[in-house]
Length: 141
Image 1 (tube, rainbow, N blue to C red):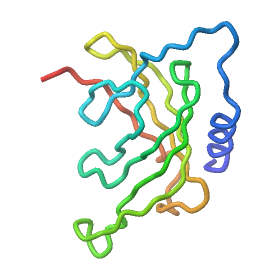
Image 2: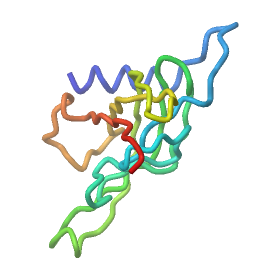
Image 3: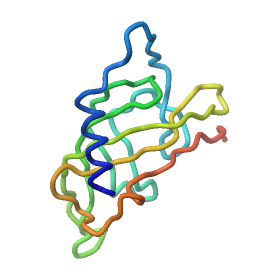
């Protein structure tokens, strides 16, 4: 299953081009950890509690369509000897954002992030089903 997800992600990043005649909307957002919509983010934090797991330097294709695909660098804390004293390691990865939601501000946003590592993974026992996160918009407080 993980291999199938990786193949789909690779095809999406390398070969997805919007259909001719379809207007792209760059105002689609992806909520950050606080639920605030961010248009075409260049980084996404997946471990919102401590930022020890994030994607940086994201390059997108298809942003504003029914899904967008990206490639970036995963930065993850190895937590050795502890998370406070750990080292941040970099891994190449692919990701897709899908789904739609309407934020309290009225802005449209993606909701799901699915990711896969290219080559080595810091989580060798991770199942494909756990390689996704939902990002919900939240009202301003």
